[in-house]
Length: 355
Image 1: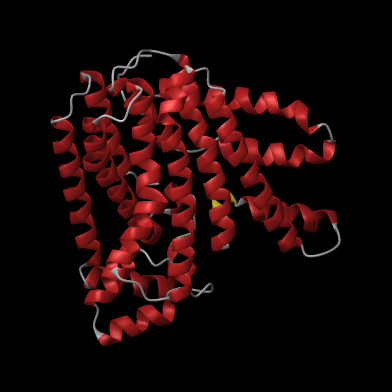
Image 2: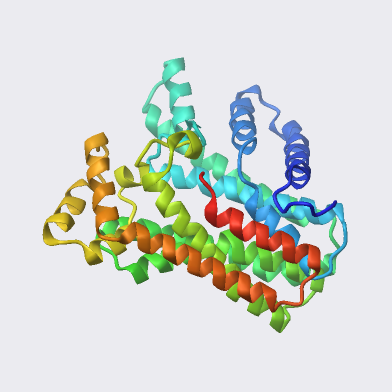
């Protein structure tokens, strides 16, 4: 597999092929025709996605001298099942209607219940089905990882990181729920949530997995690279996500305009806004943020406050600073030339994306 671009169609296609092959091997386990909607929802959900986590894992492997081994692509692809699990559960917790331009999984099953005229609550059925599908994908991600075909000693070296990554993700999801429930948050607390829920899980730990799979050990330079490059790209990735959640184009993001505002997301962007807002601006933010019926005028009012307080500009500056720091740390790392190029491209792609 050549390295002309970190997010090339080649790598994406290889990841997609392995995901389809793994899911296809599971289909005979279902048996009952009633389970086919689960696979249909899974197929549609897995057909989309940026594949960033598999890319960071794969290029971590290459950075530490790993060869062109199909097994590492399979291991990396398993992270996409973990990501799908997290997103499906996240949409239930946030009561989101859309994901990637389509009905969220719980809304899909809710509509199925309503269309069939079944008994009971359609919304409860949809949420229950989505929780189960997300949990199934979590189980299968571990199965795909273990069955990737990588040497047992490589998997054994990386297993503690694999476990920690999933634990950090669950802790981060809980901290995110807690932030929304408690209301007001500081920039530092929002940063803590972002680091655990997204930063470490999206960049640092996938990169670390690939590095350790190849090196078979957690060497000092690997830890430095994962912290100085991985964490900073991860935080910048989440900062970009915060901006897109408010200012993103629905045609690009696949979610309604201002969806994070309706959901009341207590992001780093919102925390910074409240820390510099006037009394009148802060009162408007507290009144409008989290209103599920927030209309276009309310979204525009919140956007204007975020811009007027300088929070948007500060976030963009932070993204740039974190990216610059990460790329400077990459210059000092003893990685292969092709991995250096790919990790540079990946960092830029992750922090300048539009969806």
